[in-house]
Image (cartoon, rainbow, N blue to C red):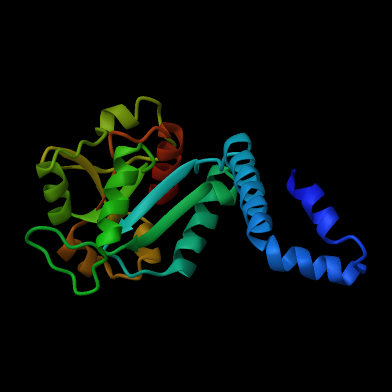
Length: 216
């Protein structure tokens, strides 16, 4: 005898309200299981049939002041300049990281994992970091695009590249990024804040557009 037949027999002669109370009392776990199964099916359909699109450009700001409003303004400004959808550009300052030789009081271990997970997965197109952190990244096997590789196609502006520990980098103090980061040129030069492009990144055209935007 299936559940529906059993319910029908056991509730014969009951009013509609009594039937509802009976079902809720004795079969709530069946209903919960059905609801969970439906939820899994809906989630699977949404996740696999309509997957979230990866950003067209993702830049991480490492060990800078976390400021989501500032990040959004930078996203909007770059999106307009590069003729991209604002939602497809991600500037993320939620990366407070400690590493060997450098301790940050409010460092978040999950930020460290997030940075290198996105890096290894090819999701990071650009990173703003200190020269000291760049040395650490190189020491653990981090690789970066060279100026020649990124500028195979002529850009609209002249980019002043530096060779830092064998890595092609752009000094933030020489770009409009310093205005968004709310630091003076002296502070940036003292820290030697750099913009670099991880080798795993795939959005080369957007990286060139970002260079045009910050150096224009």
